[in-house]
Image (cartoon, rainbow, N blue to C red; front, side, top):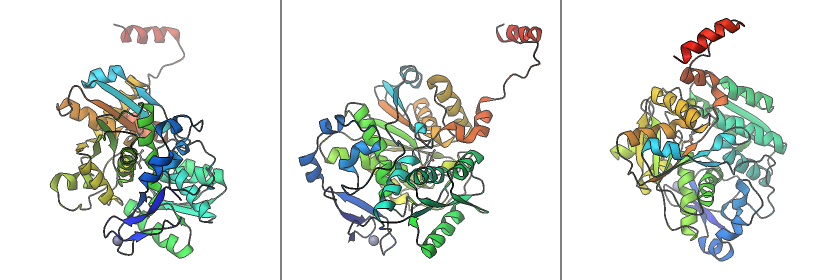
Length: 410
Ligand SMILES: *Cc1c(COP(=O)(O)O)cnc(C)c1O
Ligand SMILES: [Zn+2]
């Protein structure tokens, strides 16, 4: 890989050759992919990327850690829409607002970006089986992307995973282990099984390449805004791989001279489950918390990528903010009704946090802000109904309908 120098431990600084199945440092620290920005700068420009007719995350290959001959996996991941929402901007009291709808990926979450990368690297490394543990979306996205590429999957999910996500796994032909325990225990079981059976590891905190897939959401936001960087980017945070990836993406562009500014990250977690935000706020090392929010994708009490996430939030001069489950349900309604976008609870938690900060006057009125919708609401219809309420139930009788109509239009 001409664009990659090596992998570097974020804890002790030890450097490793960028092998496709590298995992963590011998000290236990997570590795980070270090790029040769001089090489990228010399050989690629924003215009080269704009000229690409590859409308997937793989249009950013100059910034991706893959060999030249590595084949792009088949599913169409990335290049999700960035909608400008002037009515929402007005409501929030900010100058400009955009919604990045990553629920429109093939398995309906941002996790497809990591899974597409994981599948590419597994094939590069010569594996035929890939495994992960997940609160749901990493699993369903791995299962789909692997199925399309002809790889086998072993997937470990906590038993609380919403049925929509489990249905996806089964449809994509994964071997699904529904673990009678929480996410933490699920993760540990998957780790032991992967060690024992030697599968390719798609656990985002262990496999440093996955974050490189996730960062493409930032590269896209930048390109879709004409390489002008917004003041803030708001998103939900669980393990912390997504927010660390978003930061890496914006930093890559900055280091390679494609952009001249970095955004501040708005890190949104649940009031009940916010170990990353709590660490940012107190400056103390992070401590485990209970898993207690209806936003299942960010119900992570023991975050697997806390260090990278905490660094990202602090380095960006970002804002940690916590929201209640009611505020998340409210964001589901508002995003649906104002923008026509149906996000799952964790999918709109970024939006919920942004709304809260705007209400509290913590975002300047001339700010430009992007909120990322990280997952589609069809995966979790039970919470959709909880947010939006039941339909009007009626006999097939026009007289009865007229009464209802009059009532509604009084
Ligand atoms: C995984 C996920 C997140 C959080 O990403 P992390 O990398 O775990 O911080 C947020 N929203 C959705 C929909 C997810 O699936
Ligand atoms: Zn180390």
